[in-house]
Length: 140
Image (cartoon, rainbow, N blue to C red; front, side, top):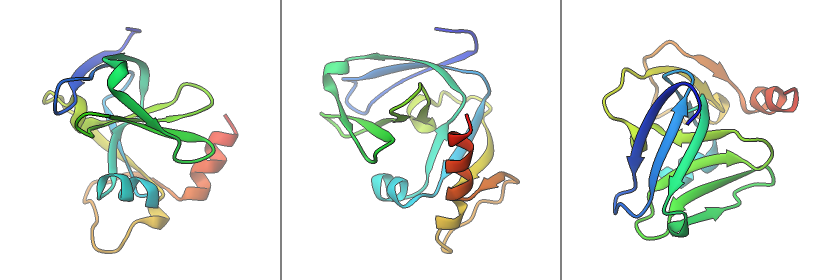
């Protein structure tokens, strides 16, 4: 693992174990249509992931959800394991997968323009539209 805080977790059935290093204890929400379809609500994920180790990779199925990203899940129990960009090494790890009671800081929301009106979070967060997200990643 690289420098940073490490967090560990596993899927529901235990076939896949994940260890991640995070640079900050921040959690972000993604409200895009795909994330909400994938999990039934917004994806709450660790975004400052610097290293990911997966044990039990033979039990991981990867779905190419767009031209630029893919989503991984346990092929045995269906637990969501990651969202990652195909180019580069950006991972978003669902916080519930590795939450051991850490003092996470919910500080950002993306695709805020796709968030439905029936829910809202009370936290003060940095909010970005889908276009702002695409612009930010194309500039890096």
